Image (cartoon, rainbow, N blue to C red; front, top):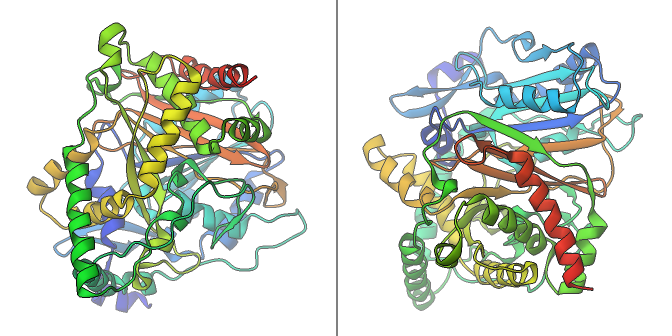
Length: 491
Protein backbone atom coordinates (compact mmCIF):
# COMPACT_ATOMS: atom_id res chain seq x y z
CA UNK A 1 0.00 0.00 0.00
CA UNK A 2 1.36 3.45 -0.89
CA UNK A 3 1.94 6.18 1.66
CA UNK A 4 -0.91 8.19 0.13
CA UNK A 5 -3.29 5.28 0.51
CA UNK A 6 -2.09 4.81 4.07
CA UNK A 7 -3.07 8.43 4.84
CA UNK A 8 -6.54 8.01 3.27
CA UNK A 9 -7.34 4.63 4.83
CA UNK A 10 -6.16 4.14 8.43
CA UNK A 11 -4.68 0.71 9.05
CA UNK A 12 -6.65 -0.28 12.13
CA UNK A 13 -5.16 -2.73 14.58
CA UNK A 14 -7.17 -5.91 14.89
CA UNK A 15 -9.07 -5.93 18.21
CA UNK A 16 -6.93 -8.69 19.70
CA UNK A 17 -3.78 -6.64 19.00
CA UNK A 18 -5.25 -3.37 20.27
CA UNK A 19 -6.25 -5.12 23.51
CA UNK A 20 -2.61 -5.13 24.67
CA UNK A 21 -2.34 -1.37 24.32
CA UNK A 22 -5.49 -0.89 26.38
CA UNK A 23 -4.53 -3.37 29.10
CA UNK A 24 -1.06 -2.09 30.01
CA UNK A 25 -0.28 0.14 32.97
CA UNK A 26 2.84 2.03 34.13
CA UNK A 27 3.47 -0.78 36.67
CA UNK A 28 3.10 -3.49 34.02
CA UNK A 29 4.20 -2.47 30.51
CA UNK A 30 3.13 -5.27 28.18
CA UNK A 31 6.46 -5.92 26.49
CA UNK A 32 7.86 -9.28 25.41
CA UNK A 33 11.57 -9.62 26.21
CA UNK A 34 13.89 -12.18 24.59
CA UNK A 35 17.55 -12.87 25.35
CA UNK A 36 19.69 -14.90 22.96
CA UNK A 37 23.29 -15.97 23.34
CA UNK A 38 25.00 -15.58 19.94
CA UNK A 39 28.82 -15.88 20.27
CA UNK A 40 30.70 -13.97 17.58
CA UNK A 41 27.81 -11.70 16.55
CA UNK A 42 28.97 -8.18 15.68
CA UNK A 43 27.13 -4.88 15.49
CA UNK A 44 27.75 -4.50 11.75
CA UNK A 45 26.62 -8.07 11.06
CA UNK A 46 23.46 -7.60 13.13
CA UNK A 47 22.64 -4.32 11.40
CA UNK A 48 22.96 -5.87 7.94
CA UNK A 49 20.88 -8.86 9.04
CA UNK A 50 18.03 -6.72 10.41
CA UNK A 51 18.05 -4.42 7.41
CA UNK A 52 17.69 -7.31 4.99
CA UNK A 53 15.53 -9.82 6.85
CA UNK A 54 13.69 -8.08 9.74
CA UNK A 55 12.49 -4.87 8.14
CA UNK A 56 10.59 -6.55 5.24
CA UNK A 57 7.80 -6.99 7.81
CA UNK A 58 6.00 -3.71 7.21
CA UNK A 59 4.53 -3.76 10.73
CA UNK A 60 7.99 -3.32 12.22
CA UNK A 61 8.30 0.06 10.46
CA UNK A 62 5.04 1.25 12.01
CA UNK A 63 3.95 2.51 15.40
CA UNK A 64 0.52 2.24 17.04
CA UNK A 65 -1.32 5.54 17.43
CA UNK A 66 -4.76 6.25 18.87
CA UNK A 67 -7.25 7.95 16.59
CA UNK A 68 -10.99 8.58 16.74
CA UNK A 69 -11.67 5.23 15.10
CA UNK A 70 -9.40 3.40 17.57
CA UNK A 71 -5.81 2.18 17.50
CA UNK A 72 -4.18 2.37 14.06
CA UNK A 73 -0.82 1.54 12.53
CA UNK A 74 1.04 4.64 11.36
CA UNK A 75 4.13 4.46 9.19
CA UNK A 76 7.21 6.02 10.80
CA UNK A 77 8.26 8.39 8.01
CA UNK A 78 11.52 9.14 9.80
CA UNK A 79 12.31 5.51 10.49
CA UNK A 80 15.99 4.91 11.22
CA UNK A 81 17.31 1.52 12.29
CA UNK A 82 19.81 3.34 14.52
CA UNK A 83 16.92 4.26 16.83
CA UNK A 84 16.24 0.54 17.43
CA UNK A 85 19.70 -0.99 17.50
CA UNK A 86 22.00 -0.36 20.45
CA UNK A 87 25.59 -1.40 21.13
CA UNK A 88 26.59 -2.03 24.77
CA UNK A 89 30.39 -2.61 24.91
CA UNK A 90 30.59 -3.04 28.70
CA UNK A 91 32.02 -6.44 29.77
CA UNK A 92 29.39 -8.31 31.80
CA UNK A 93 29.48 -11.40 33.98
CA UNK A 94 26.26 -13.33 34.63
CA UNK A 95 25.24 -11.31 37.70
CA UNK A 96 25.86 -7.99 35.96
CA UNK A 97 24.02 -9.16 32.83
CA UNK A 98 20.99 -10.17 34.89
CA UNK A 99 20.84 -6.77 36.57
CA UNK A 100 21.33 -5.01 33.22
CA UNK A 101 18.49 -6.98 31.60
CA UNK A 102 16.27 -6.22 34.63
CA UNK A 103 16.97 -2.52 34.18
CA UNK A 104 15.92 -2.71 30.53
CA UNK A 105 12.68 -4.45 31.56
CA UNK A 106 11.79 -1.43 33.67
CA UNK A 107 12.32 1.04 30.83
CA UNK A 108 9.29 1.83 28.65
CA UNK A 109 9.67 1.66 24.89
CA UNK A 110 9.40 5.02 23.14
CA UNK A 111 5.95 5.89 21.78
CA UNK A 112 7.17 8.23 19.06
CA UNK A 113 8.57 5.37 16.98
CA UNK A 114 7.91 1.63 16.41
CA UNK A 115 7.93 -0.07 19.80
CA UNK A 116 10.78 -2.55 19.56
CA UNK A 117 14.54 -2.63 19.92
CA UNK A 118 17.68 -4.81 19.87
CA UNK A 119 20.60 -4.44 22.30
CA UNK A 120 23.88 -6.23 21.55
CA UNK A 121 26.29 -6.95 24.41
CA UNK A 122 29.32 -8.42 22.58
CA UNK A 123 31.53 -8.70 25.68
CA UNK A 124 29.16 -10.69 27.87
CA UNK A 125 30.61 -13.70 29.68
CA UNK A 126 29.89 -16.84 27.67
CA UNK A 127 29.55 -15.05 24.34
CA UNK A 128 27.67 -12.11 22.84
CA UNK A 129 24.21 -11.54 24.33
CA UNK A 130 21.42 -10.15 22.17
CA UNK A 131 18.41 -8.61 23.96
CA UNK A 132 15.19 -8.04 22.03
CA UNK A 133 12.14 -6.19 23.34
CA UNK A 134 8.84 -5.62 21.54
CA UNK A 135 5.39 -4.48 22.58
CA UNK A 136 2.80 -7.25 22.74
CA UNK A 137 0.53 -5.44 20.25
CA UNK A 138 2.93 -6.46 17.44
CA UNK A 139 2.38 -10.16 18.05
CA UNK A 140 2.32 -13.02 20.53
CA UNK A 141 5.14 -15.43 21.23
CA UNK A 142 4.11 -17.95 18.58
CA UNK A 143 3.91 -15.39 15.79
CA UNK A 144 7.25 -13.88 16.76
CA UNK A 145 8.71 -17.38 16.86
CA UNK A 146 7.40 -17.86 13.32
CA UNK A 147 9.23 -14.68 12.28
CA UNK A 148 12.51 -15.82 13.82
CA UNK A 149 12.06 -19.35 12.48
CA UNK A 150 11.89 -17.93 8.98
CA UNK A 151 15.03 -15.77 9.28
CA UNK A 152 17.23 -17.92 11.56
CA UNK A 153 18.62 -20.77 9.48
CA UNK A 154 19.57 -24.38 10.26
CA UNK A 155 23.18 -23.91 9.17
CA UNK A 156 25.58 -20.94 8.91
CA UNK A 157 25.78 -21.34 5.13
CA UNK A 158 22.01 -21.07 4.56
CA UNK A 159 20.13 -17.89 3.72
CA UNK A 160 16.48 -17.19 4.66
CA UNK A 161 14.20 -18.01 1.76
CA UNK A 162 10.76 -16.75 2.80
CA UNK A 163 10.25 -13.69 4.97
CA UNK A 164 8.32 -10.43 5.27
CA UNK A 165 4.66 -9.43 5.25
CA UNK A 166 2.78 -6.36 4.07
CA UNK A 167 0.58 -4.77 6.70
CA UNK A 168 -2.15 -3.48 4.40
CA UNK A 169 -3.47 -6.98 3.76
CA UNK A 170 -3.58 -7.66 7.50
CA UNK A 171 -5.36 -4.44 8.45
CA UNK A 172 -7.96 -4.86 5.69
CA UNK A 173 -9.07 -8.07 7.41
CA UNK A 174 -10.73 -5.97 10.14
CA UNK A 175 -14.28 -6.21 8.63
CA UNK A 176 -13.77 -9.93 7.99
CA UNK A 177 -12.72 -10.47 11.58
CA UNK A 178 -15.78 -8.70 12.99
CA UNK A 179 -18.13 -10.50 10.57
CA UNK A 180 -16.58 -13.85 11.43
CA UNK A 181 -17.04 -13.12 15.14
CA UNK A 182 -20.74 -12.37 14.58
CA UNK A 183 -21.19 -15.52 12.49
CA UNK A 184 -19.39 -17.66 15.03
CA UNK A 185 -21.59 -16.26 17.80
CA UNK A 186 -24.77 -16.89 15.79
CA UNK A 187 -23.86 -20.40 14.69
CA UNK A 188 -22.27 -21.56 17.94
CA UNK A 189 -19.09 -23.51 18.36
CA UNK A 190 -19.48 -27.23 17.80
CA UNK A 191 -17.17 -29.56 19.70
CA UNK A 192 -14.65 -31.18 17.38
CA UNK A 193 -11.67 -33.47 17.76
CA UNK A 194 -10.40 -34.23 21.22
CA UNK A 195 -7.22 -36.21 21.37
CA UNK A 196 -6.11 -37.60 24.70
CA UNK A 197 -2.48 -37.44 25.76
CA UNK A 198 0.32 -35.11 24.87
CA UNK A 199 1.77 -34.26 21.52
CA UNK A 200 4.70 -36.55 20.72
CA UNK A 201 8.05 -34.86 21.22
CA UNK A 202 9.38 -33.30 18.06
CA UNK A 203 6.05 -33.28 16.24
CA UNK A 204 5.90 -30.30 13.91
CA UNK A 205 3.20 -27.69 14.36
CA UNK A 206 1.68 -25.89 11.45
CA UNK A 207 3.49 -22.72 10.44
CA UNK A 208 6.01 -22.70 13.28
CA UNK A 209 8.62 -25.28 12.36
CA UNK A 210 9.67 -28.38 14.24
CA UNK A 211 9.13 -28.07 17.97
CA UNK A 212 10.67 -29.90 20.87
CA UNK A 213 7.42 -30.66 22.64
CA UNK A 214 4.01 -29.25 23.43
CA UNK A 215 4.45 -25.90 25.17
CA UNK A 216 3.07 -24.97 28.55
CA UNK A 217 1.10 -22.51 26.46
CA UNK A 218 -0.14 -25.71 24.85
CA UNK A 219 -1.44 -27.36 28.02
CA UNK A 220 -4.53 -27.31 25.88
CA UNK A 221 -3.02 -28.27 22.48
CA UNK A 222 -4.65 -26.60 19.51
CA UNK A 223 -5.75 -30.02 18.26
CA UNK A 224 -7.83 -30.44 21.41
CA UNK A 225 -9.71 -27.14 21.24
CA UNK A 226 -13.04 -27.58 19.43
CA UNK A 227 -12.72 -26.51 15.80
CA UNK A 228 -15.19 -23.98 14.45
CA UNK A 229 -17.89 -25.72 12.41
CA UNK A 230 -21.36 -24.50 11.43
CA UNK A 231 -24.02 -26.59 13.15
CA UNK A 232 -27.75 -27.28 13.03
CA UNK A 233 -30.26 -25.25 15.03
CA UNK A 234 -30.32 -27.90 17.74
CA UNK A 235 -26.54 -28.09 17.87
CA UNK A 236 -26.37 -24.31 17.97
CA UNK A 237 -28.77 -24.22 20.91
CA UNK A 238 -26.89 -26.89 22.84
CA UNK A 239 -23.52 -25.30 22.26
CA UNK A 240 -24.91 -21.87 23.16
CA UNK A 241 -26.05 -23.32 26.48
CA UNK A 242 -22.61 -24.81 26.96
CA UNK A 243 -21.02 -21.48 26.12
CA UNK A 244 -23.19 -19.79 28.77
CA UNK A 245 -22.16 -22.47 31.27
CA UNK A 246 -18.47 -22.07 30.41
CA UNK A 247 -18.62 -18.28 30.65
CA UNK A 248 -20.48 -18.51 33.96
CA UNK A 249 -17.77 -20.83 35.24
CA UNK A 250 -15.04 -18.37 34.23
CA UNK A 251 -16.83 -15.42 35.85
CA UNK A 252 -17.68 -17.24 39.09
CA UNK A 253 -14.26 -18.89 39.52
CA UNK A 254 -13.07 -17.72 42.96
CA UNK A 255 -10.44 -15.02 43.12
CA UNK A 256 -6.99 -15.90 44.41
CA UNK A 257 -6.38 -15.90 48.13
CA UNK A 258 -4.54 -12.80 49.45
CA UNK A 259 -0.86 -13.63 49.83
CA UNK A 260 2.59 -12.25 49.06
CA UNK A 261 1.81 -12.97 45.41
CA UNK A 262 -1.13 -10.53 45.45
CA UNK A 263 0.55 -7.49 47.00
CA UNK A 264 0.27 -4.05 45.42
CA UNK A 265 2.92 -3.64 42.73
CA UNK A 266 5.87 -1.30 43.12
CA UNK A 267 6.60 -1.12 39.39
CA UNK A 268 10.21 -2.31 39.81
CA UNK A 269 10.88 -5.72 38.29
CA UNK A 270 13.79 -8.12 38.35
CA UNK A 271 14.38 -11.04 36.02
CA UNK A 272 16.47 -14.19 36.37
CA UNK A 273 17.00 -17.34 34.36
CA UNK A 274 18.20 -20.84 35.18
CA UNK A 275 20.94 -22.81 33.54
CA UNK A 276 19.98 -25.35 30.85
CA UNK A 277 18.30 -28.55 32.06
CA UNK A 278 18.35 -31.51 29.62
CA UNK A 279 14.94 -32.08 28.06
CA UNK A 280 15.40 -35.82 28.56
CA UNK A 281 15.04 -35.25 32.33
CA UNK A 282 11.50 -33.97 31.80
CA UNK A 283 10.73 -36.72 29.29
CA UNK A 284 11.83 -39.37 31.76
CA UNK A 285 9.70 -37.96 34.58
CA UNK A 286 6.69 -37.58 32.30
CA UNK A 287 6.88 -41.17 31.07
CA UNK A 288 7.44 -42.66 34.53
CA UNK A 289 4.55 -40.70 36.07
CA UNK A 290 2.07 -41.08 33.21
CA UNK A 291 1.82 -37.29 32.86
CA UNK A 292 2.74 -34.85 30.12
CA UNK A 293 5.87 -32.72 30.10
CA UNK A 294 3.63 -29.71 30.63
CA UNK A 295 2.26 -31.24 33.81
CA UNK A 296 5.81 -31.69 35.09
CA UNK A 297 6.72 -28.09 34.25
CA UNK A 298 3.62 -26.66 35.89
CA UNK A 299 4.12 -28.74 39.02
CA UNK A 300 7.62 -27.24 39.34
CA UNK A 301 6.11 -23.76 39.21
CA UNK A 302 3.39 -24.73 41.71
CA UNK A 303 6.06 -25.79 44.23
CA UNK A 304 7.89 -22.46 43.89
CA UNK A 305 4.63 -20.48 44.18
CA UNK A 306 3.74 -22.42 47.34
CA UNK A 307 6.98 -21.32 48.99
CA UNK A 308 6.66 -17.72 47.75
CA UNK A 309 3.13 -17.15 49.08
CA UNK A 310 4.20 -16.61 52.68
CA UNK A 311 1.20 -18.61 53.91
CA UNK A 312 1.28 -21.70 56.11
CA UNK A 313 -0.88 -24.05 58.19
CA UNK A 314 -4.65 -24.04 57.77
CA UNK A 315 -4.49 -20.84 55.71
CA UNK A 316 -2.33 -22.60 53.13
CA UNK A 317 -4.67 -25.61 53.05
CA UNK A 318 -7.57 -23.32 52.16
CA UNK A 319 -5.68 -21.16 49.66
CA UNK A 320 -6.89 -20.67 46.09
CA UNK A 321 -4.18 -19.80 43.57
CA UNK A 322 -4.37 -19.78 39.76
CA UNK A 323 -1.84 -19.41 36.98
CA UNK A 324 -2.93 -17.70 33.78
CA UNK A 325 -1.60 -19.92 30.98
CA UNK A 326 -1.63 -18.72 27.33
CA UNK A 327 -2.92 -21.25 24.79
CA UNK A 328 -2.37 -21.13 21.03
CA UNK A 329 -5.80 -21.20 19.33
CA UNK A 330 -4.91 -20.60 15.67
CA UNK A 331 -6.16 -23.92 14.34
CA UNK A 332 -9.38 -23.67 16.34
CA UNK A 333 -10.44 -20.35 14.79
CA UNK A 334 -12.86 -19.87 11.88
CA UNK A 335 -11.07 -19.72 8.54
CA UNK A 336 -11.52 -15.96 8.18
CA UNK A 337 -9.76 -15.38 11.49
CA UNK A 338 -6.75 -17.63 10.99
CA UNK A 339 -3.48 -15.78 10.33
CA UNK A 340 -1.63 -16.32 7.09
CA UNK A 341 1.97 -17.50 7.09
CA UNK A 342 4.46 -15.01 8.55
CA UNK A 343 1.67 -12.66 9.69
CA UNK A 344 2.40 -11.27 13.18
CA UNK A 345 -0.52 -10.93 15.56
CA UNK A 346 -2.12 -12.18 18.77
CA UNK A 347 -3.94 -15.47 18.42
CA UNK A 348 -4.03 -17.06 21.84
CA UNK A 349 -6.53 -17.49 24.62
CA UNK A 350 -5.98 -18.00 28.32
CA UNK A 351 -6.85 -20.73 30.77
CA UNK A 352 -6.75 -20.26 34.52
CA UNK A 353 -5.12 -23.34 35.99
CA UNK A 354 -5.71 -23.99 39.72
CA UNK A 355 -2.28 -24.52 41.27
CA UNK A 356 -2.15 -27.18 44.04
CA UNK A 357 -0.18 -25.04 46.48
CA UNK A 358 -1.78 -26.88 49.42
CA UNK A 359 -0.24 -30.14 48.21
CA UNK A 360 2.50 -31.20 50.59
CA UNK A 361 4.23 -33.71 48.30
CA UNK A 362 5.72 -33.44 44.82
CA UNK A 363 3.72 -36.36 43.36
CA UNK A 364 0.47 -35.03 44.80
CA UNK A 365 1.06 -31.67 43.12
CA UNK A 366 1.92 -33.35 39.82
CA UNK A 367 -1.16 -35.58 39.68
CA UNK A 368 -3.50 -32.76 40.67
CA UNK A 369 -2.01 -30.61 37.91
CA UNK A 370 -2.66 -33.49 35.49
CA UNK A 371 -6.31 -33.66 36.56
CA UNK A 372 -6.86 -29.91 36.14
CA UNK A 373 -5.17 -29.66 32.77
CA UNK A 374 -7.17 -32.60 31.40
CA UNK A 375 -10.37 -30.89 32.49
CA UNK A 376 -9.36 -27.59 30.93
CA UNK A 377 -8.25 -29.38 27.76
CA UNK A 378 -11.93 -30.00 26.97
CA UNK A 379 -13.11 -26.49 27.82
CA UNK A 380 -13.75 -23.46 25.63
CA UNK A 381 -11.95 -21.14 28.02
CA UNK A 382 -9.14 -20.23 25.59
CA UNK A 383 -11.45 -19.22 22.75
CA UNK A 384 -13.81 -17.36 25.03
CA UNK A 385 -11.02 -15.49 26.80
CA UNK A 386 -9.55 -14.50 23.42
CA UNK A 387 -12.93 -13.24 22.22
CA UNK A 388 -13.66 -11.31 25.40
CA UNK A 389 -10.26 -9.57 25.36
CA UNK A 390 -10.70 -8.60 21.71
CA UNK A 391 -14.24 -7.27 22.15
CA UNK A 392 -13.31 -5.47 25.37
CA UNK A 393 -10.71 -3.46 23.44
CA UNK A 394 -13.59 -1.84 21.51
CA UNK A 395 -15.31 -0.62 24.69
CA UNK A 396 -14.80 2.71 26.46
CA UNK A 397 -12.18 2.63 29.21
CA UNK A 398 -14.85 2.97 31.91
CA UNK A 399 -16.37 -0.36 30.80
CA UNK A 400 -13.13 -2.04 29.74
CA UNK A 401 -11.36 -1.82 33.11
CA UNK A 402 -13.97 -3.80 35.10
CA UNK A 403 -13.77 -6.63 32.56
CA UNK A 404 -9.98 -6.66 32.82
CA UNK A 405 -10.12 -6.67 36.62
CA UNK A 406 -12.66 -9.49 36.60
CA UNK A 407 -10.24 -11.84 34.86
CA UNK A 408 -6.83 -10.80 36.15
CA UNK A 409 -7.88 -10.84 39.81
CA UNK A 410 -8.29 -14.58 39.32
CA UNK A 411 -4.57 -15.27 38.81
CA UNK A 412 -1.37 -14.72 40.78
CA UNK A 413 1.06 -15.49 37.97
CA UNK A 414 1.39 -15.89 34.22
CA UNK A 415 3.09 -19.12 33.13
CA UNK A 416 4.04 -19.36 29.47
CA UNK A 417 6.19 -21.37 27.09
CA UNK A 418 6.93 -20.62 23.46
CA UNK A 419 8.96 -23.68 22.42
CA UNK A 420 12.10 -23.36 20.38
CA UNK A 421 13.32 -25.69 17.68
CA UNK A 422 14.83 -29.13 18.23
CA UNK A 423 17.99 -28.18 16.36
CA UNK A 424 20.25 -25.15 16.90
CA UNK A 425 19.58 -22.12 14.72
CA UNK A 426 21.91 -19.50 13.25
CA UNK A 427 21.45 -15.74 13.21
CA UNK A 428 23.58 -13.82 10.73
CA UNK A 429 25.76 -16.92 10.38
CA UNK A 430 26.37 -17.35 14.13
CA UNK A 431 24.90 -20.12 16.25
CA UNK A 432 22.28 -19.27 18.86
CA UNK A 433 23.51 -21.30 21.83
CA UNK A 434 20.83 -20.22 24.33
CA UNK A 435 17.54 -18.38 24.23
CA UNK A 436 15.30 -17.15 27.01
CA UNK A 437 12.24 -14.91 27.19
CA UNK A 438 10.17 -13.18 29.83
CA UNK A 439 6.43 -12.99 29.61
CA UNK A 440 4.55 -9.73 30.33
CA UNK A 441 1.82 -9.66 32.97
CA UNK A 442 -1.43 -7.73 32.74
CA UNK A 443 -3.58 -6.20 35.46
CA UNK A 444 -2.21 -6.50 38.99
CA UNK A 445 -0.29 -9.74 38.32
CA UNK A 446 3.33 -9.26 39.38
CA UNK A 447 4.89 -12.66 38.61
CA UNK A 448 5.70 -14.16 35.22
CA UNK A 449 7.30 -17.56 34.71
CA UNK A 450 8.60 -18.56 31.29
CA UNK A 451 9.82 -21.96 30.21
CA UNK A 452 11.90 -22.34 27.06
CA UNK A 453 12.79 -25.54 25.24
CA UNK A 454 15.53 -25.19 22.63
CA UNK A 455 18.04 -27.57 21.06
CA UNK A 456 17.46 -30.35 23.60
CA UNK A 457 17.47 -28.20 26.74
CA UNK A 458 14.91 -26.47 28.95
CA UNK A 459 15.42 -23.23 30.89
CA UNK A 460 13.22 -21.48 33.43
CA UNK A 461 12.94 -17.71 33.56
CA UNK A 462 11.17 -15.50 36.07
CA UNK A 463 10.29 -11.82 36.09
CA UNK A 464 8.75 -10.43 39.24
CA UNK A 465 7.84 -7.16 40.84
CA UNK A 466 9.96 -6.47 43.94
CA UNK A 467 6.85 -6.49 46.12
CA UNK A 468 5.84 -9.98 44.92
CA UNK A 469 9.08 -11.99 44.77
CA UNK A 470 12.01 -10.03 46.23
CA UNK A 471 14.38 -12.99 45.62
CA UNK A 472 13.78 -14.41 42.12
CA UNK A 473 16.91 -16.59 42.37
CA UNK A 474 15.32 -18.50 45.23
CA UNK A 475 12.14 -18.95 43.19
CA UNK A 476 14.11 -20.43 40.28
CA UNK A 477 16.09 -22.72 42.56
CA UNK A 478 12.83 -24.11 43.97
CA UNK A 479 11.49 -24.79 40.45
CA UNK A 480 14.56 -26.85 39.56
CA UNK A 481 14.66 -28.61 42.94
CA UNK A 482 11.14 -29.92 42.37
CA UNK A 483 12.53 -31.99 39.50
CA UNK A 484 14.84 -33.78 41.93
CA UNK A 485 11.98 -34.36 44.39
CA UNK A 486 9.82 -35.85 41.63
CA UNK A 487 12.67 -38.07 40.50
CA UNK A 488 13.21 -39.36 44.06
CA UNK A 489 9.48 -39.98 44.51
CA UNK A 490 9.29 -42.04 41.32
CA UNK A 491 12.22 -44.34 42.16
